Image: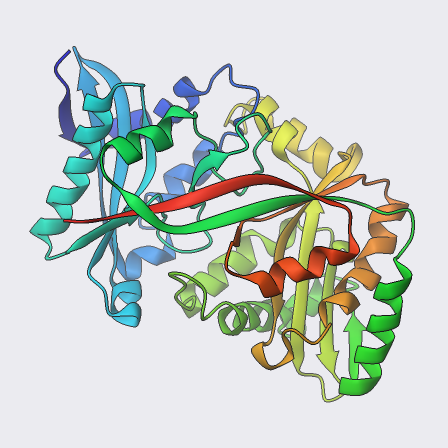
Length: 376
């Protein structure tokens, strides 16, 4: 059947754009849907990334039926920072029809060329805190709330359309041990003494504002992630948004901070109980009962798996065993609360320094994701 592409120009079409993913993965046991309200905010002027990004959204149709979607994004700050002219494609979904995937990517290419771009990359979002990377391994595992799930035929289409690998991310599942490994304890004590470090806990939410920990955490993330693939430092408006939106959801005992004797923040580890099952039950909706499933997972009946959302170490302290301080603080909490497994967030396959921190644990490599590229 003939495939036609239509750019999203109305609120109703944007609703269709968002809901297409729910339709595609309605009965899939591995996909974790985003909340509809979050997606509407992401694609609106409420998203602080819109200060430096421009985007267009496209729907693919066959005989008036939606069969695919894609976002075309130009992140001007990233292009300036990395001296590139890249149009990103993100939030891409399509039926198993090469004509559909080809038409969607051609729409992104045309949008990029129209605005002077010379290369296309994706799947990527507006920023690095959006989900990124197409799943190429691990299709038979439930996704995490911060990552993309897609059908196995997606990467096959990318290859058939002559897109090449730009970068890969890997993920791991860790078994929570019965006690803190002795080696970790020894290294933690050595590092504390050698560099004059201490663990700090956020004992109440007032500390986030009154002692400026929210700002300091994201300043540290900006510094520790600055050399990673495609990363661009978060703006102040983004930081304010993330502090307000996300830090309030955290169980503070599952946040670990490391400071020097002078009070400089040099390490952060943020984890939380997995919301994957709760989001699957919510089916992308807070109302009428989606909020209950999420609240239950947060407050009432915790899952047996947790997500390691963020780990950041100040560059001059990386590869010095500082991560051991984070986990000697966090592991007793995981054990006490009955967690059995930890899911890592995607890590660049080339980032061996981050992967080295899992040497204390029994691990399984679970998923691999790929960012594709193509000259246009």
